[in-house]
Every structure is written in C-alpha cells, then in structure tokens.
Length: 208
Image 1: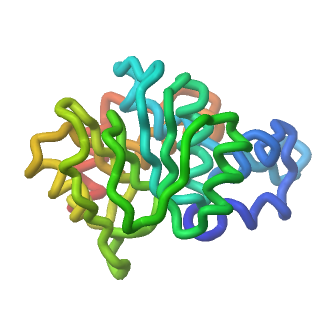
Image 2: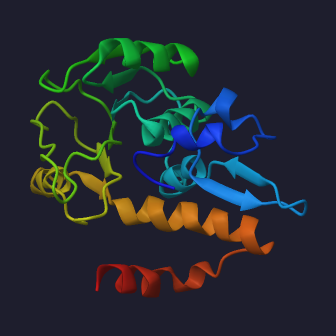
C-alpha cells in the first residue's frame, strides 16, 4: 500500500492492533484465518531499521511531510526518544497536529524556510519522485555528521541525496525502507523471517 492510500485504507479493513490510534496509517493488508482483511503498518519498522545503529536519543530531527509515510516516521522516531522535532509542511495545522499526536516537542515550518541545524533530515513526501517537483533545500545549516534520509526510491538518487553527497553528509536512500518494510511484511505473510542475506540481489533487481 502506497501513496495516497495509506490513510484511506483504514476505513476498509479490520484494525485489531489499533494502528489507527497509534500511527494513523497502514501499508500492509493481511487476510486472517476467518478471511477478514486486517490492516497493519510495517513502514515504521522498515524506516527505522537502517537507523538502528545510531543513538538518536535527544537528537534534533526534521521530517518533511504530513502524510501516511510521515506518520510512520514520526511514530518510529518518537519511540527512539529523539529531541526537538521540526516538521516541514505545506500545512502548519497538520504539522502541529502531528506533533501533538505523537507527543513530540518542536515546531512546524514551511517548505521555503531555512532548515534548522538537525542531526537527521527525513524527506517523507513524494517530492523528488519521478514526475514530481524536486525537494532540494539548502543543506548548509546541517552540522557535520548529519544524516539525510530520503524515502523516495524512484529515482534512487534524488536531488536531495545528490546535494547531501555533495556536502559530505551520510545518506540513506528509499530502497532501504522499501526493502526493510517488505521484510517485516514477509514475516507476517509467511510466518518466517525474510531471507535478508539476499538484500543486495534484491536491490540490484529493483534498480535494473
């Protein structure tokens, strides 16, 4: 399940895990033994997996977007006990509502505002995707050692990631989350762990 259906699908499936009340978006639908359709979210775990080696406790973060993907990102970051959060959004009201929903302290700013000096910048919008306008903000406010994470995977090298590479920042591309969330979904579908030793082969197939 992807843009723009992650929120709308919640009205069509069962929600025994209260995904609506926690994350507020679904990306995976399962058929249970009674043939009922059940929704869940593997995006949050898939997003966080490549960050799991970092200590983000108290770290400042900026997340771009207020849609279904952004909700999963904010849920995961809240569990990681990050510090000040900046939501970059077209709608200040939506951004403020998400800060409150996930119990995060911080602020909301527009897309044209200068980025704060955050340790982690996450693009959780479709900006930069094929057919969409790019998201290429000035990255100079980011400190040395910052990480730039773009959830877009088509193209894999977005304008945001290209700028991050030019500035010497560590980057994480959208395939990391795509493959990560699919691995968690695989386990739900088949009852066993995904063969993660083949991730490199899967990346090669997806980028061929």
